Length: 122
Length: 122
DNA sequence: AATTTATATAAGTTATAGCTTATATAATCC
DNA sequence: GGATTATATAAGCTATAACTTATATAAATT
Image (cartoon, rainbow over the protein chains, first blue to last red):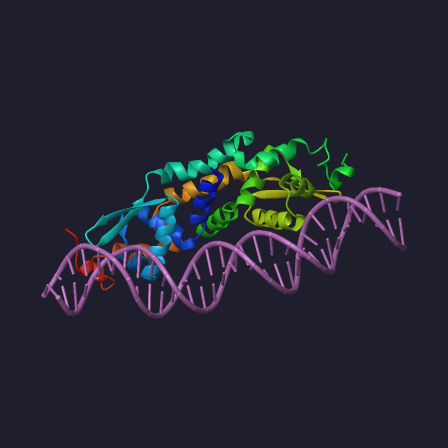
């Protein structure tokens, strides 16, 4: 879960890709239309679209020699929700955080207690 | 808006920082506690905390020689909402996208029309 | 005052991401 | 079937981000 979330956040955390996503929310666009609209090179667009596609944010539809991209249905609900869901999730049920949770619980009572605990605050 | 959103998404799109955010949702923690919990070096944690702080995701409270970090009140609502808000916003009202919007509207009718429009699809 | 503790920052290195240029593929048009 | 159009991918370069090691600062302890 954390892995997929990271992929989505990384994909969206780039200005050109944020623009593409917003433009695709207006309507489906092919690569050459995006090229004209954004005024940047075609390989650059294709590369960004690949990142967005791998993150599950956009989907592709081929028609003749064109590739049309549009928002994957999951975007408006799913991708936003996935972060909210991560924050809402019970921390004990996130496998990626299990070692940290264990250490957090034992912060005060075992050999993992660290130097900063030797001078506890009031 | 797009700039601030990008900063937040970049800050969250990193596994260690995602973990820190989740841990801080449990309770406020000082740097040395995070060090013990995450098992990574102190400078690495301080650096990640700086990124999160600059993005407005966490806030700092100094007590004696410690620095305690906690989620900024805006996180659960604000940061998630900001992406939703970006997607909900009227595209014409996003200044960063005004050149693109202009080109998008004129795709079919002026000199900006590009090669791909010379062979329109059915 | 000297030492220890807690944190921050800076410098240097490595890894990753983004961009450009060039090329490949595949459909369409003449 | 050769040329054009649309897109993808690969190679090389540059910029950015992350990590490590070392050092600075400042409070607390002795």
